[in-house]
Image (cartoon, rainbow over all chains, first blue to last red; front, side):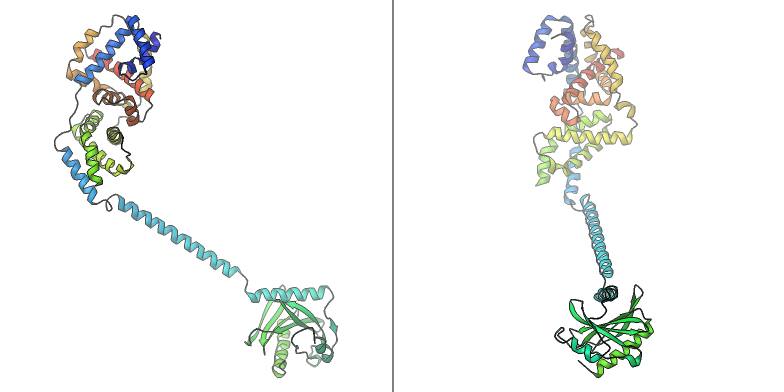
Length: 262
Length: 176
C-alpha cells in the first residue's frame, strides 16, 4: 500500500473501522514510512484532544422534567391534539368524496333514466317503421278489399282476436284492406284506410289490462300518430295526413269500437 | 404503557441529544427547545421504532429537528454546503502532507490542551464537519451509526471525519 492509499484510509484505521487485512497493510506501511507515521500521530493527537478536551454539554437541570411534562400532556390528549384534526379532516374529505360519488351516480342514473325512451316512444318508433315498410314494399294489404265482410273474416285463424273492421267510405275514409303485422311482440291486425290518396295504417291488438287511454297524438319523422286504448284493445294509427283529419278518423273508430265491442 | 416504555428507552440519551443540539446551534436555550421538540416528535413516531439502536434513532430526530430549526431561524446557507470549497483545500493538503516531515506535532499539542481554543476551533467548523466530529469523538458512535443519523454513506462519514480533523488542525494553527 502506498502513501496515497494509506492517507486515504488513515482516518478509518485510526478509528478502528477498517477490515483486518486492510489494517494489517497499513500497519506494514506505517512501520516503513515516517511521513505517514507523522500524519497518523497528528491525526491521533487531534482525535484524542477533541475526545478529551472538547466540551460535552450536559443537559441542564429541568430539561428532563419539562420533557416528561410535555410527554404527559401529549399522552393525555393523544386523540385530541395533533391526531384529531388529521382524523377529522380525513373523515371530512372521505365524506366529501363519498357524497360526490353518490351524487354523480345519482345524476348519471337520472340522466340515463331520462334518456331512456319510454315504452310508448319505442312503440311509436315501431309503428313508424312498420308503416314505412308497408309503403316501401308495396305490401299495404294482404287482403285488398273495401268490403268489411271480406276483410274481417280474413283475419280468422290468423289472430287470436277479431278486429273491429268497418268500411268508412261514407265518412271519407274508404277501407283499402287488411294485413298481418308484428308490433310490440304481438301479431297485430293492420287495417288500411285511405283519405284523399293518403294511406292510413290502423294497428290493433288486445291490451293486457282493460285500462282506457284517451286519444293522444304525436309526430315522428313527419308522420302523425294517434294512440288510444278502447274496450280492451290497443290502437295505433299512423299516416301522413294532418293531425286534424287523423283525429277525425280516430274518433270514428273509437266510437265504433264502443258500439261493437269485439 | 407506551409512554412508560418510551421514557425508559429515550430519556437515558438526553445528554447525547442535548450535546448534539448544543453543538449544532451554539445556544443553550435553542438546544433545549430543539431537544424538547425532538422528544415530542420521537414519541409520536415511537411506534415506527423497531428498537435496536435507540440512541442513533433519537439523535437522527434531534439532528433533523435542529436542521429544520437552523433553516427557519438562521441564514446559515453559506455555512452548510461548501463542501466543494474545502475539497480543493483538502486535495492540496493531503497531497503535501506526506512531503512535510517537519510539520511538528508537538507544536500543536500545546494548543489542543487548551480547552477554550479547542471549542472555538470546533465552533468555527462548518456544521456538516462539526456534527460528524461531535458524533464520533464525543459520542463514540460507529461510522455505521453516524451514517444512519446523518443520512450519508459510510464512505462520506470517513471523508468528512478526515476533512474535519484537517480543518480543525488548520483552525488551531491559525489561532496560534
